[in-house]
Figure 1 (cartoon, rainbow, N blue to C red):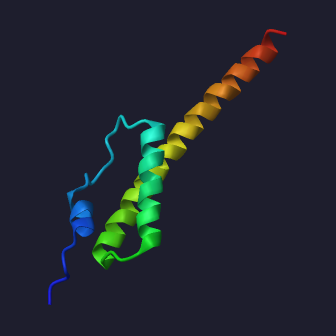
Figure 2 (figure 1 turned 90 degrees about the horizontal axis):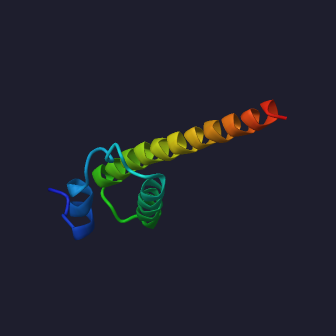
Figure 3 (figure 1 turned 60 degrees about the horizontal axis):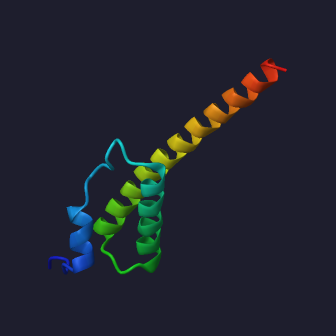
Amino acid sequence: MAPESTPESAQVSEQQPEPPPDISYEAAREELIEVVRRLEAGGTSLEDSLALWERGEKLAQICQSWLDGAKRRLDAAVSGERGNE
């Protein structure tokens, strides 16, 4: 018996397999929040849940990369200020 297709499960299948490479931190974070909300709500098939989880992991990596870059920039700015004292 094939799993029942719902509008929500169809939406998961239609999502891009990879987030766009130029996605902003804010856009990645908002989509990650939505992925978590959908996973916590339940009601999706195992396959759709796995697809959501994988997308969430990729979005979390993107967010972390943005945060790491921001930290490097702040660290460089602070160390530059100390060098000018």
